[in-house]
Amino acid sequence: TAPSSSPSTAPSSSPSTAPSSSPSSSASPEPDAPPPPPPSPDLDSCQWYNAKRDQYYDLTPLTLKNDSYRFVDNDFERTYYINFCANAGGAATCDPANGVCMKNELSSFGCGSIKDSVMGPYSGVGSKDGATLTYVDGSQCGHGPTAVNRTSRIHVMCDEEAGDSVKITGVTEDVTCVYDIFVQSSAGCGSGTPPESSSSSSGHSTTFWVLAVGIPVVVVLILLGAGGGAGFLYYRQQQQSQGYEAL
Image 1 (cartoon, rainbow, N blue to C red):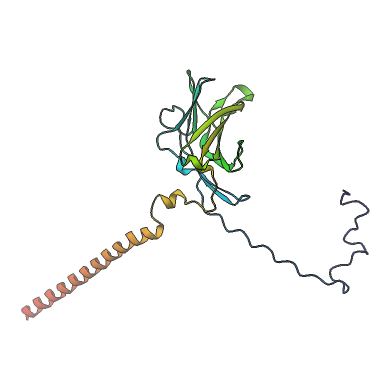
Image 2 (cartoon, rainbow, N blue to C red; image 1 turned 90 degrees about the horizontal axis):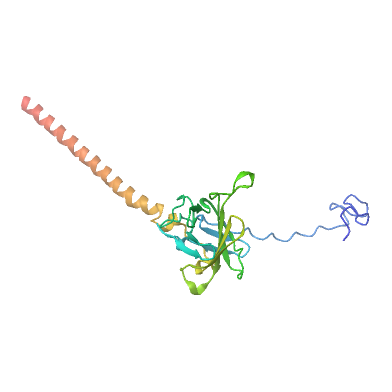
């Protein structure tokens, strides 16, 4: 393929190329531009929209409160405590900021902070549908200038039959201090419907609270105003009656 600077390609200022304003050339109408994509909804940190597949992923149903999923690696005598967009609570003894905690006989290691968690396309094996949740900035791994912070990548593969349950099929450390956790769950299956954010699903909408709280407050103010007006009229009547008695 000839580069753009090849002599065989005439520049736009070449006499052989008629400018768009030349009478001999008629400008053809440009095709209609495609409509812009709809705006993405406000998603939580455990939700993600894959624009390429036009699919939404929501891992919030997998989040455990004050508990975690566990995976025992008998080969290396390790136990992993795993949670989705929440700290690995329960028996985990790592810093609470970590979404994955790894324990052995000697100590515990935070394997990724939930503060800067990132969701993206599934980067595991065996499926095209799914999502990967990444935790970074875990506890220090190694010493000296080569020391790094531990990272965990939770690969959630689509499994319709698994429901909201979590099946951890394995944990690997092919890259030192980077833990790849392989999970099967229906939460890894994309949907064409945007998920509700936790702020909207955990309670009523703003309109509800405006109506539920605002209306009673207005009614109370009206009653107080009416009561104050009645009190003032009673006071005037008493003053007038006292004036008549004085006369």
